[in-house]
Amino acid sequence: MASIMKAGAVKEKKDKHISEQPVTLKNWYKHIDWVNVTFVAIIPFFGLIAAFSTPLLWKTAAWTLFYYFLTGLGITAGYHRLWSHTSYTATLPIQIALALLGGGAIQGSIRWWSRNHRAHHRYTDTLKDPYSVQKGILYSHMGWMVLKQDKKSIGRVDITDLNNDPLVMFQHKHFVFVALSMAFLFPCVVAGLGWGDWKGGLIYAGILRLFVVQQATFCVNSLAHWLGDQPFDDRNTPRDHVLTALVTLGEGYHNFHHEFPADYRNAIEWHQYDPTKWMIWAWKQVGLASNLKTCRRSIIEKGRVQQMQKQLDKKRATLEWGIPIEDLPLVEWDDFVQRARDGEALVAIGGVIHNVGSFMKDHPGGKALIASAVGKDATSMFNGGVYDHTNAAHNLLSTMRVGVLRGGVEVECWKRRPVKGEVISSTLSCVG
Image 1 (cartoon, rainbow, N blue to C red):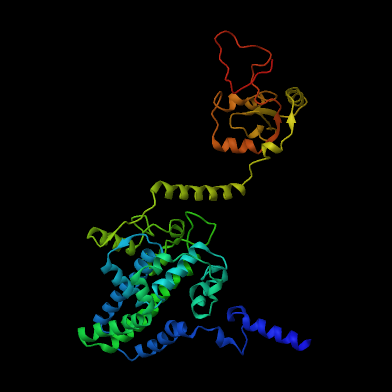
Image 2: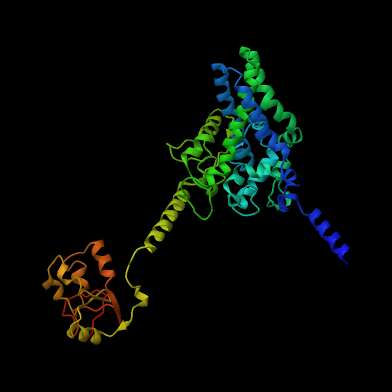
């Protein structure tokens, strides 16, 4: 029996994916995705060492920055906004260019990248999110890349459109060739044939540029869910911050993006940095892009106002507003009058009884004026009959509530009927 149980335990352990097994000294290396580690850590490490013995020519530096922008655009304008969210339509030449440049960032094929990103949007901050920040900022930045994941744990999404796209599938099938050619060979050849700097082209425009563009993209998964503001919704972690936008070619306005993912823009204000948006817009002007999707401004502003109101409500909940009216005791009019005659400084305003005893000596209008309202309905006096009180006065008065008049608002027309021609507001009631 013991041997059977032991065999069952061993089988269960083998059936478990490595990501579900604890890390030990004996199996730690099995948790590592060595292919990804090679391209995001090992190659950049040796590239950095080689840079110390490789002079950086100004032409190579300029080419490195330019190629960083191009390969970054392959991810932001291509992998992300074109294929993951279909936020615009691009002509075939633009699609081919973006597929090649995106491959030069070595972040997986279009199909693989977009499938994960769609899952990220559908299952944000859950265990089905492939790079959920709930697992820690380091995991969402790089951990999900360097540690093996169980594909079955990632949420299911529809990628039928990608599977039916010949260019996407061609790049997916030949990704290794595309990636190595565009990440290392192409920048090396440009620098070599252009100004004879073969080694510099490989080290700076190839290896170190690759490291920077990868880390910049990873910041969208980590920093953009940790640093910044949430002007549209705070139920999940995406945030807006200019710093993240600067390193990601405009992808840092992530709170907006998660609210309106089909919008081809990440930044909607003129002063916000989003070169990817302007590049797509420029392509449209020359006929290389079309069907640029945008969300209506009124819908965007509704989201902003709702979030502002939510924040105001949170702030409001921390302030003292007096006893809630629904929690106050009901008081008959005659009891109210009698209690005032017995010495309580009670005043009725808007159907609510207030004890103003502690405030009478501080009343800006004088003690006599407020004393004249004790035992009476002072609604008209308080709301413009004598003085139209400020918000501060209304807020101060709310802290003095002690009861609610049965029957609602009372006015000083009690024990008489209106004379001919006199109009009494229908919102007030008289005691006759």
